[in-house]
Amino acid sequence: MKTLKKFLVIALAAATMAVSALALSACKSKEPVAADITAQWSFYSVTDETGTSFRIPGEPEEDLPFFVCNGTEFELCLVPGKVYHGTITENEDGTYTLTVDDPDKAIQAEIDGNMLVIHFSEVNEIAFEAVGLGESYAAR
Image 1 (cartoon, one colour):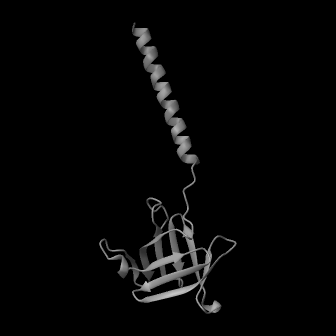
Image 2 (cartoon, one colour):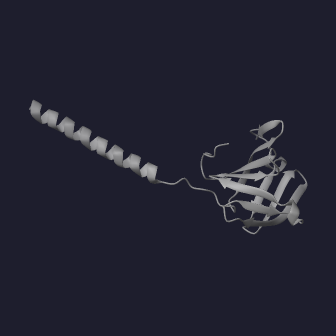
Image 3 (cartoon, helix red, strand yellow):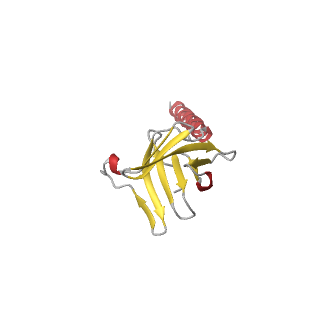
């Protein structure tokens, strides 16, 4: 009887380890879902020479910056009442160029996981998080 119990305990432990190993390998093989430029974006943060400011919980959506894109055209609002319209082009390296009226004043944007970061200069940028893709895993 003791031998049978020992065998069952060892078999159960081996089966548990095998199932755990399979589950772990399945998790490791999944690539994180990267957002598409046409995703629904929600304001996340703004960075300038003074530092980074994050969204304040409870702030009304209409008071927040927003970004909307259909794949070729975009709308970007940085302050209430001032909306920029322009075209967007995907570059070979996966980044995007946003152009408003003057091609010489184009700005760069990139998607890192579920974060869209629009760079205005080396220190000025605004970040948006894709809605519905789970927690942000971008290194921000």
